[in-house]
Image (cartoon, rainbow, N blue to C red; front, side, top):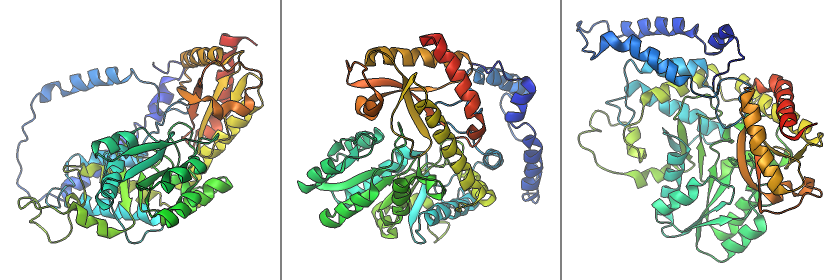
Length: 464
């Protein structure tokens, strides 16, 4: 779908065409660093058809939702910061590989500095960590380390945790169990206590912002259970990790993020709220000693320096140095500090979500779940039954998309909406609902427009 209602000039501005001049100047400076090399003619197959092919590519890419625009209020898709996009592009003129220092000398140093900044955000001046392709690979590494330290022991995560934890446990041949959730989408502590009391649990995964609702698991209670039963605690903060910098969290979420310093490992995705291009994930361990678990020999790779190579602490081999350059540049421009410009952007996202939720809660046409802990809101149209409401959700989704307001659809358990269902007939165990991830700071100023379009789409489906 193309955003037809947006004027062409505005689209070009949003797509940041002016930054190409900055990139051109940076490329000139980069080239000056290699001026001592003799000239050569690069062999570029198909060079004479590059413009034609790129033109065709731009046409194909128009078949997307406008993820960069604040009217996109659907999935977890946030545009990278211009400095990240430019730094990534700039690094592509060299195309470094951060597996070994020999293939990515400068960007390996940038990666270590950027990861140190993330670890410092969690209160870990000493740590072991690196970038990877995304949250799935980062969680794989965290659970692989956990399995090495507690072989054969069970991994627990909530029913609302990302599905990859169960899949990863299967890949690692570790037993896995999903812990039921409470009515706010958080791990049920009574159920967790029952399971760990039986023994055999090696790792509990605390979701610091679930994918579906942004719910934050009760980390304080999980850590207290760790003291008694001795399991590892891994924090999957792929989505919510940066919210520890925000100054407007609720009391319970604030307490959880403040306790992240005490967990054993953390995953965060800079390509979500960290303003990075896909794919950029990060895994960090509190104990640098887990590095010994990665130890391996590669006589043809690690010979160029006695300094640690990133490939020596990673399950992945080749990794793009461009991701490290982009993250380093972004954190240099926007430091990860409470009260800073980056943190204020997160606060705006949460304000947008709270505003949107309050509008929904005050409108009799909708049923809502619990208030958002981060910046994700789930809701559904009211109807005589859950089945009818589920059907209406999909129709509103389609009607809103036709008006350039892409939302998302989710299938969630009825208990999340129980307090607001009233006399609706409960003829199914789940509710197909609408979901909005208001993760752009601009959403704070666009909630009114989003609400207006949602109202029109809802009126089309259910009437006044």
